Image 1: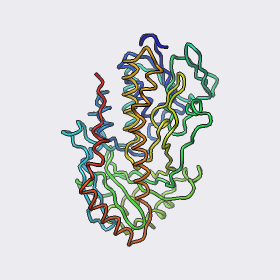
Image 2: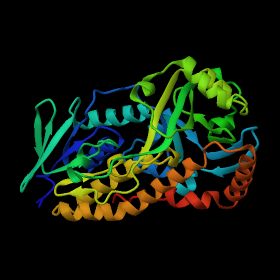
Image 3: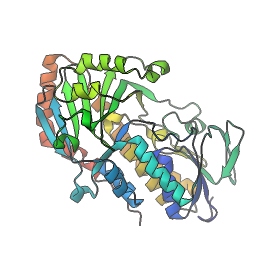
Image 4: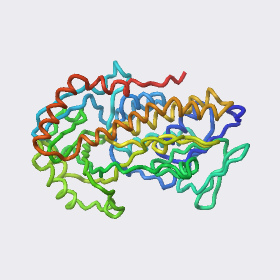
Length: 401
């Protein structure tokens, strides 16, 4: 049992979105912590992402929403098109009056930079190149052992170490591993000046194009760039060597073979890509538990979601804020806190994970006839039910007070 916040010290394994945000909220709660990140700081690493209104509300509670909105691209709507450019539906997205914050698209590196700068200003210690090896639990605390021979002790340990979590293997030694969803994500960044055909409406939208041969998405991000993304369906995940192959010629050949006849900016975005990206898409649909003893999982370590859901970072931010609030208010009983955290969060995040899988299926290659039928049905149902179907995701808000 933990007596009070003055004696509580939290070990956070993982310096990604969930771990950094949790540390900042613990600081607000008067709880000390140390972050352990397995890799060196990578300022330019990663793909692009969108922080939905529910995630931006969490960042607003940290005082960081305005900075990220200024550095990123505010997205006001979802725009769905057929491959010839016909608009199937437009759905409002970042309704500030309704949700309190807009949606904002940015590079992952920008989000990390803003969160890390705030960590450094707050005086929170973050240790890099600390790969977790094992965990020991005792009646009075928990000990993290690292591959370099170092170790550290605290009152509780939070595993925010992502989809390939080492912490998860402590809680579930025979537990579930992430499942490959049959999709390889492909994308890249492009300077806006290289794609003059992008309209101002394009730049303030999340754009999704559905054709017989596949799916193509694009939007603006930070610092004068656009990003695009697509799904390649595969029976097996790509090898590590293939994922690291950033050959522009190969990527352009592969993508243009599929998307050269898609409307407007698709071909131009592919041709002018500066930083191509590939990743195997996996998720974790459900774990039997997120905690054991003094150890708890949050973020992708507990509930990794396909990027098709557009909620990975936002769910991690929600986890961080809610857990810190519970630890602040229920500081005398970490077992109760962990149980309540899992009970309150599990239903919401697993529903979003399932939605991510469902959306991925709708982006696969089909016959031209099937594509016409799909697009017609999308046009009807998105116009009738689109915003109603996702309103429950965006309006979720945690009261810190």
